[in-house]
Structure formats: structure tokens, C-alpha cells
Image (tube, rainbow, N blue to C red; front, side):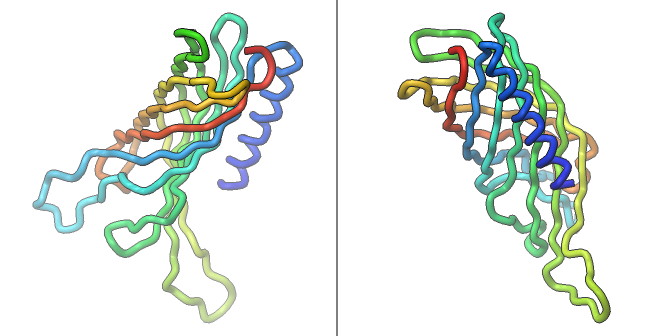
Length: 198
């Protein structure tokens, strides 16, 4: 799954780069954020699913904007360090989405970006304790879930074509049985560069 997502993201970047020759605006960015999600409130369960929150999430994103202020974007965000699932198993969630984008110019150097789309949450569980007597055993188990995504950010040009974008991303993960809630909020900022028309 990781190879597929990497290939899909690389193809998306190549497509966006091709749009640069058509006098479109292309924004490429890297960022960091923290994850928030509701905590379990029912204490009657012996082992309730944990909340999907905390940790530092790295991200890469690309968007192409056309002259009518609409465009397309793709983004991938993953937990930088492995987390602990219910205090004992290593886990790493990853969010990958594609979106329609609308941007609105607010004032000199400042634009508002709004995005909405769909994607996949991939949860990787690592097996770091079991050993196989013969051959090799799988070292991880992957669980994938369809999700919906909404995002908003303020893109401020700090120097020439370089920008900083404080942003909020909301995910609604469908059939997310590993965690307490499918409602996930990622708050952070990204730093990027604009190619083409601006």
C-alpha cells in the first residue's frame, strides 16, 4: 500500500508540474501538525479503543490553481514517530487525500485556501516482538479506511515565492474500528514555494 500511495503522489506531482507550462499556479509545501480526536467517555469497556490523537505529523502537499481561483490538490500526512496503541503495540497512522480547491485573495501577500475531497487513512501496526523459527514473518499489519476531508488555511507570502500556511484539516474516517472516533482534526502549518503564475 505504501508503494501505491507513493506512486500515486509522484504521478500527481508530475501532473501538477505539467500544468506549470499552462501559466497556472502550483504550490508545493511540507509541514508539521498535531492530531486531535475525542477521548473515550465510556469506562464500562475493559479495553476501549484508544483516541487517535497526539504525536507530530509530517506532511507533503501540492496544489494547482487555475485563473478562476479553483484547482486541485493532493496531500499525504503521517505520524513522524511510532505511537503506542493501547500502551503496548507500535502504530503509525497515515492520511492521504485528493481535493477540489478554492482560493480567495484577501490582501497583499495573503490568500485563503479551502479544500474538500476524499482519501484513505492507512493504519500500520508493527509486530516487534514475535520471532519466526522458519522463514520470514510479516513485520506489520495494515488497515485501510475510506475518509472524507475538509481543509482550510491562510497562505502568506513571506519572501518572493516562499509562503507559510497555518492550516486546519478535518477528517471523517468511515468504519474506523481501531480508534474511538472517526472524527479527527489535524492542526499545524506548512512552508512552501509557488511555481508559475501568482
